[in-house]
Image (tube, rainbow over all chains, first blue to last red; front, side, top):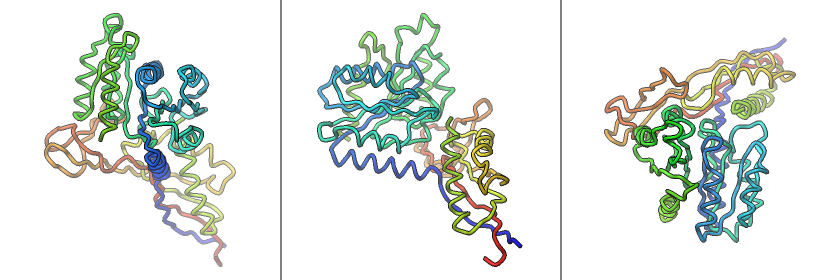
Length: 217
Length: 125
């Protein structure tokens, strides 16, 4: 004979990632490393932005490049002579704190003062997964359509900075970059908004200044 | 697939608790889903159904309960349940119900919690 019992589980599935994210942040802070993570859609310009920051600052940067097949982005970044670890997510659509924790172990932390994490191209899933960074920057390009910001509210509500990229192409694709600025500010009045054209070097100084401001706080 | 890692976490939590209570079968699992967790319940249920094959969860009934969104407003200091504009979003836009401000902090509604399970176990256990 069997009996039936009601058993409390009370297990928060999100807690495990949050705890690992906190541990990542603590491990980085012990080494004096500031961590910024970039999220954004496929083709928004995340990798280009990482490359530009590496080439135009004197920080000792290490990079974790996440992708479903990570060798492509990691290979690009490697050419800029910084340590980079590619994080393969396989069929998963986001990085999590567990993967980032292992990636950090493979970086030369004693020779770094900044860690850049480039997430998988996706405006939805990374929202649920803190990684342990100090600053989250979401990159969105006008070529994705000027309704992209209002269609993905939560990532803009939970990021610190939004870079609206490829503004030089706005007219060509019939997008209104200022609408995207307004949408982001409406969703998150505290978000810092920067318009950029990384191909032409526009907005890069402002992005770097924004990271440096966050480093001071 | 986003729901895959969530589902695996849920199954691990359920089976761990079930086994520590000498369960022979899990009849029912109640999961609380935050309205702002970026998870679609239908997709989650689908992937759970695939992953539980050949486990003691195989025939479990899955019950979802929604965790409402609780906020604090930076503009008017309102503290409580938020208004959700989800007429054309599954992921809703959250704002303050008192002053319509978007300058809010989300206090609750992003979590996924395995609340409880109903198990079968030997009578003499």
